[in-house]
Every structure is written in structure tokens, then in C-alpha cells.
Figure 1 (cartoon, rainbow, N blue to C red):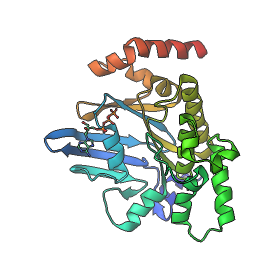
Figure 2: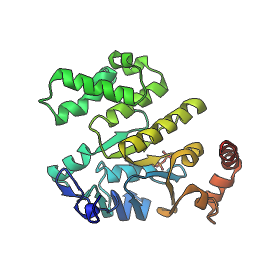
Figure 3: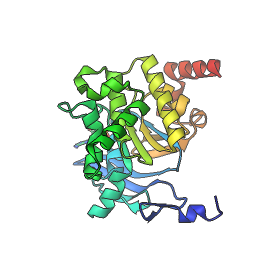
Figure 4: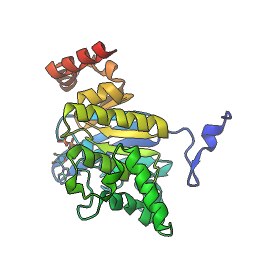
Length: 275
Ligand SMILES: Nc1ncnc2c1ncn2[C@@H]1O[C@H](COP(=O)(O)OP(=O)(O)OP(=O)(O)O)[C@@H](O)[C@H]1O
């Protein structure tokens, strides 16, 4: 790589350079009288898995929706993949949508379509001229990447277990080979073994595909196992962003309860035993 490779790095003709893939400044979100965010600042660096934690209702999902352009914030600036994410013109929207894979909490699969058809939805939208056979092969590849057997392709989401539905949602999120992946509580509802397997799948794919991952979670195991840094939402702001080992020492009541409560201690002890 040349010295100025970062400066000239582009994505679909947009100069990305070495800037964070997501940059949020002064974000404000309110619903009526309820102020959810009051000056949120956050950077997501290229190639990292950034975990986002915070108590229930602190606005993790609203933050993700704002970054994705699904909710217009009341104030602030957001840049995603080199463009102003608050711009509403179709070219900007397409740039972000085309390059962002999203796994929503419930998988958000179309229930009347097979898994294969679900994975093909974004391909049809962005590449309508692709021959059916190629689209089918690409869907099969993504399904295998997500750790599903090939015969899942022809099944309806209702015929899969919760864990397999998550993998199907992940396959769809990866269908366009996005550099940026958003995951909203990916291990929620999975048993501990299924959750650990899903964590390891995310880490493997992130490394193999060079993904940058924005990951909302309540799952302490996930934070310790795969997150490079963790952002804490509290008091309507991001109060800290750091590797999880540094956060444990932060003098904040929610952080102390979360990381140094019984579950936090148990997770840390288990991680140390496996080191
Ligand atoms: N469309 C909406 N209309 C009104 N209030 C909303 C809307 N969306 C979110 N909120 C409120 O914003 C706050 C933050 O919601 P959000 O879903 O982002 O929380 P969260 O941190 O993701 O919570 P959880 O961990 O429980 O999923 C909540 O109080 C929620 O009720």
C-alpha cells in the first residue's frame, strides 16, 4: 500500500480516505417531551467491531436508525462512508443503503419468501439485470457464508429455528458485499452455545471480509469475545468509547453495575479461564 493510499481510497466513486466510516457529532433526538440524545458524538473506525451498550431505552436503536437515515435527527451531523448521511437526495441514500448491511433484532425476513428469495431481494433491487442462475448462486454463497446448510435456501423463515433465522438475516445483510455491517442485538434470544457460535461467526466474517461492524448488544459475552471497542450510551450521550477492559474501571454508576455486577464478573472470570 502506498503512503497516500488512505487519502485516495474510494468507494463507488466517493473518496473515503482514512476517515472513520461513521462519524456522529452533536446528535440530538427527541420524541415530544422526551429527550433521548443530547449531543451524542461517536466515531466508528474502519475495520473495527464497535459494540454499543447502554440501559434499556437509552437510545441505541434510535442511534442506529439515525445513522442509517431511517430517522431524521433533531440536530447534529452524521457522516457515513464519506457522505453526509442526513442528505436526502437519492444518490446519497443509495450510496449508504448499497454499502450497509443490516441485521435487525427480529431478523426482519419476509415471511412469505423462502430464505433464498429473501437473500436475493437486495440483489434484485440493485442488479435487476443479473441472470436468475447467478443470483441464485450468489444467494447460496451468502447462505453458506452465514453457516447455514444449502437446503435452508428453499425453506420459509417459519421453518427455521431462531438461530437459523438470525443466520438467514445475516446472509441477506451480506448479499451486496457491504463494507459496513449493522447488527441490532444479534444474540438476543439465542441459547449460550448458539450465541457463542454466532459471535464467532461474526468475528470470522469481519476478519475475512474486512468488515466494519456497528453492534448493539446487551450481551456481555459478546463484548468480551469480539468487540474491539465499546461505546456506552448513558445520560443521553456517549459517555465513553474504549476497549472493554478499560471501561470496567470507569467511575459511572451504570457502568459499574453493568461490568462489575455478578454477571459482569462471571463473564470476565470465564474469559480469563479460556485465555
Ligand atoms: N418512534 C418513536 N416514537 C416515540 N418514542 C420512541 C420512538 N422510537 C423510540 N422511542 C423512544 O426512544 C427511547 C430510546 O429507544 P431505543 O429503542 O433506541 O432504546 P434502546 O436503547 O435501543 O433500548 P432497548 O435496549 O430496550 O432495545 C425509548 O424511550 C423509546 O420509547
